Image (tube, rainbow, N blue to C red; front, side):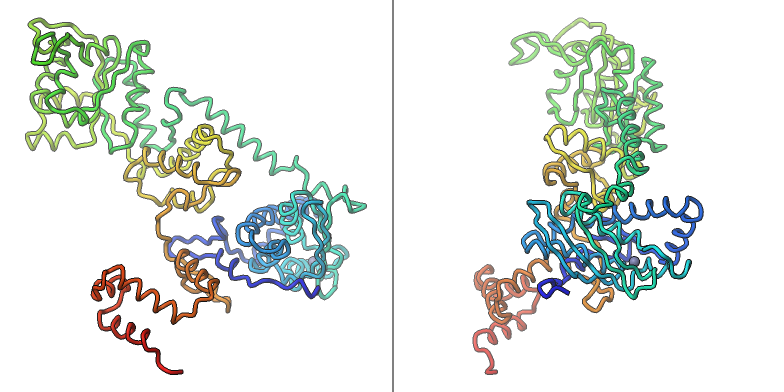
Length: 559
Ligand SMILES: [Zn+2]
């Protein structure tokens, strides 16, 4: 091994690997991983070879490894962006070991990132794949570490930004006692073109990706434009509500939309309006909770000149402004009782009387009301008129909360992502696995509106060209209980990320632990303005424990 090619400590990489005992998820950074039996992989390999032939099986497995390497290259700059180019590159071989592929020893490594020059030789001991191949086929003539080789090529290509081809010079599947691989830019290999087929863009995977993009684009065009993508949902509960809405649109029936805050009641009301014969007419929205009780009647019904002090001119109310269209009354449960009586009259007579007017005017308005409180319960409490409730409740549509339509969260989030990346002029590669899991786990008290806010924040916080990570969406969320791998390779409960970072800073700063303790104690006392009981609480100590430590810090025992 090249003497200056020693591995840096891998605690930065081990820290990426986390086991969440309660969710059944394993993470490498933001990517979800899985532990597989090599026996099962061996069986899959064998099935591939017998069903599609050796060449095609090799191609598929190489590409699988290539994809793994490609993804792992993302960790190089993230974990060792401030280290030397070699240390950064060695993230790949070290991760490959951590993932259990083989023992990797760098033999030679020469790189020039700017010139795109790369030459590397690595030794693999105990390759799982060579072992699997030998078990099944005995000693063979050709190297067999296809997945591993794909990984080396994928990782290095992503790292160098050009296609770097690795070949096995020696393989223990051929009877050697270890494997040896060599990598260079594909054009530097005399037979590079023959290997190009393993990495070509027109592969099955690429085709599938292109196809799914087309499907996505088609789905977008199928969506009603007026919903702005918000009426997205395939869950049964959402579809039921959507279907009821579409059927009501064709009629003149008064609709009552119920559901928690943020489920999108106004968007439903707008969609109802736009699917109705009244679409050419106005859509007027009033939030009853946002208007002071003494103004609400004037706002809804309008006023005649001189109706009350300050009414200098006649003014049309929202009912009149919605003539020929739809009036949306949000939070109708907050309407004061006198206003409820007037609203009931409008619904019964189909006419309104402006405040201060003696005569009634006919209005042609479809009413859509919405509430996030239980109106029946409000009726029981005497806060809502029973007769008005029956008038409004002719055609109720309940929009389910987001937590009850969890299958819609991801499609909705992707939709919002497209909208906000366009708005904020960002190019992003979607959500990380961990971000998607965090979205799925959240309880969504604020429903679709909350999702909208989170995704917009994520788009703003994510790095240009990157992906939205869990902490972009939930910056202050504490991590679930996680295990990591300790230096002995055992699972061990790990400290939260920010504590680890703090400890590293302490170590980097080279502050002796006793000095550090003395300073932390002094700072706590200072912050509590000399109140020792307060300082002790801050430190999670009893007052006596703090007094003891303070005394010790002031007169350290002789060594
Ligand atoms: Zn091999």
